[in-house]
Image (tube, rainbow over all chains, first blue to last red; front, top):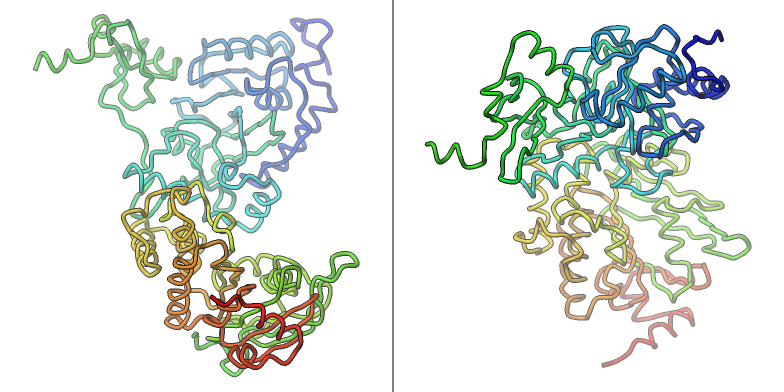
Length: 304
Length: 263
């Protein structure tokens, strides 16, 4: 493969050797062919610890080419340590262009979020997955969970939802919410908030999932149905906030609560930093962006 | 009973079932028919092959030779080991129950009593929370379990209560055949007596067939219509329960009956 000039010397293109990348691509092809099915693959040691995105990095390394543009987000943000390091890693070892703009990226590697900006056909979303097996905490035996997948015995997954309702009166599972892919395989969508679950359904982009420590790859091909599990009398619902984003005023995005001082001051801001910045550039602003940072809990009550 | 099922056929037909563990005998050449509504007791001392036989019958173990046919709702008598694993597991979820001696083997200790019962219903497709809960409460009521403790974890229950939850869990999908392995083992006598009363009543009310393995002849006498006595993996005597216990023919059965402690 021709090596771009900006490559760091001594590394193969995108860090992994060509044989390993082929092995990963074979696993990805199989995963795409069987939506939601966990394909085992020979996960390699990567220059970062397990749990920091080794699965996602290997999938990205397997599919990235010199013409790709890479975006990496961690909890929705482009500027967190993990996102910055992984972006720099591929800039160094593959010499690819990187971006923070969702619409400019061809590959987006993500931890714990799906971008707010709708994805386009042709884009690829790569998830970092800590534990791929949705039945893991209900059935500890891997031989048994594989059999349950094979025979589509998923009743037990509802036990968890039942327990939520009987304890809290509603389904309290808020992230890593189990989904049914293409009406066949039960899948863990990695720890994204359930707010993002509806975005997975019939998404035009290809969604790939890599679990490095657990050595599994799975996929949701474009325009595949992804349905969140629920009961008929307790339908699936996403989180809602009373506030909007303090910075950009968005009321349709996933908000992070940020503590601003030791006196109970806090604000809510978009977790998707690119989305928030674009809205502010377009002239949107939140309620008193200056003052909000110093708003204290209880003040609203005092004023009333 | 369902109309589709052939009433002139037994529910379970066991022919010459033999199971070896390497060169050791688990059980040898066991044959019997079980009819709808019938309760069969299997007694014998430890190591006599009772549990091996029960595990073979419930398809937890595959016998080395012999056939076990079950009268399925859809297509009459079918050899269990010619069915696909998917069909067998479906049968275990819908038509059968298995009550273990130790409730820990038959319950999910990490989820509430209600969820334990609901699991069987959800496994066969129940997707309305209200219905599942109502049904779970109904079955807990049937086994005389305190409904207020429906949302508590089984680990907070006494042994007798855990066993009640296990029984309710097995009844929730209206099975036709229940396997019981020492259902009252390890419980004190007063709890045992109440549980036996309950089991007898439920089996009678629901028209269930059951196979009860026990080493306790009193339990066998109370629950079962028919009795099989096993020793060294073989059936040495079988017949009506009262007949076997009141007039034992085989020397081993005579020994068993005479070994009952008199209070």
